[in-house]
Length: 263
Image (cartoon, rainbow, N blue to C red; front, side, top):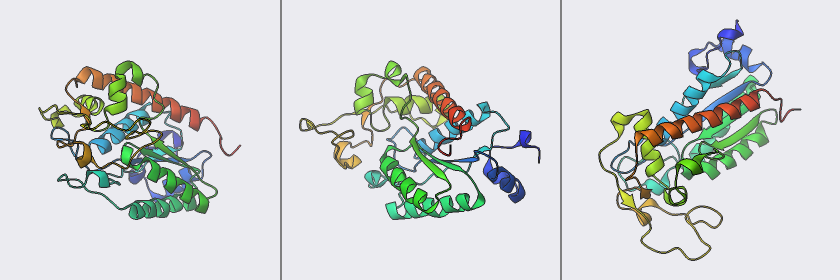
């Protein structure tokens, strides 16, 4: 096989091509995770899934073609119990999602893959994927697992978004609405909801962060939006998209040029 022509879409390869790639040094699988959940009256249910799929695909186009790096199809249905009660939301149980990751991940390890990146775009399942990664590592000692959140660690977000948006724009707010306007504007409706907390949070506590609560969206919002989407625009969306692509391109280049953590 000519490795210079390795496609980065797992499902389009033959079993012999997968065998050859899996056996290569630093062979890495990206498994994108999104959700099918309400994103207010103006964004599609698949918002998180669309985001992670688009960013990963764009990043892979920038990567050297000879790397043993590829993605499998995005996992669209995730763990979204906080959004149940809003029509359209679909949610797997935590046990189901963890079991799926363990079963599929074990199969990648058995094939010989060295790394599995769980690249997630849904904030409500960050801790669940981290737990799954620990469980999977226990049964696949020869494969390393990286549970990542697509928005974490991205330098420059504070220059594009206000502190209020970063702290309070938890769902279908300015950032997500703008990013969707840049990626699939035809899926963005005309409404621009604005909903912040109606009750003060006790000092030292928060919805997310160091001392969070397991909130349900209906506790915070009637529209399904938590934050302010009114200033959303395509220019901001394009800037966010470029920042995300730049960050994950840099991250994958760094990882694929290193033997860590096998050194």
